[in-house]
Image (cartoon, rainbow, N blue to C red; front, side):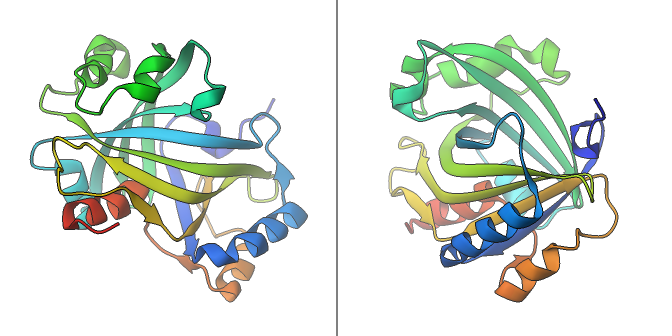
Length: 235
C-alpha cells in the first residue's frame, strides 16, 4: 500500500479553510463530489483534553503567532454512550514549524469512567503522560496540567490527485478546567473547518471553490480559539 505524504513520518503541511457553520452543507456536498471517503474512519466524534503550563505557554505560542509551537493532548474517539469499559486513548505531542507539523503519538487504554466523569483537575490526566514519557521521546513536565476538553464532529476524505488527507470539523465545543478557570463558561464555536494535509506544494484544485464560497485559508487552532474565549470569560 502506498502511503499518502500525510501518513509518512516527518513534517507534514497543513492548510485550514475556515468559515461560518452555515457553509457546512456546501462543504460536504463539494467534497463528496470531488474526493473519496476515508476507507477506515469515514466519520467520528473527536474528544481531546489539552494540557498547558501555569503560564499557558502553549496557548501563548499560538496567540503570539510564534513560528515554533507545541501542543500536548490526550485524544479519543466516540460519544460517552459508545465507549467500551476501557477505551483507546492517544497521547500526542505536536510541534509546528510555520505551516508544517511533526507529531508523536502513543496509544494506551484508559477506563471510560475517567474519560466521561473525571474532572480535568484529576491527577490521573497528567499521570498518563508521566507513565508514557519514554515512548513519547520527550518529557511532559509536572507543570503541564489539563486545561480544557474540546470535542467536535468530523468527516474524513482522501484526495489521490493531491495526495492529501482531508477532514471537515464542526460542532466544536469546549469545557474548561473549573479549578483553573472558575469564571469561565463552556464554549461553542460557530465555525466549520476544512483541513488538508499533504507533503506541501500548491493547494488542491477544489480549494478554490471553498474560497469562492466564503471560507478563508488561514491559521486556525481549535485550542487557541477556545482558550481565547475561556480566558476572556466569553461563551
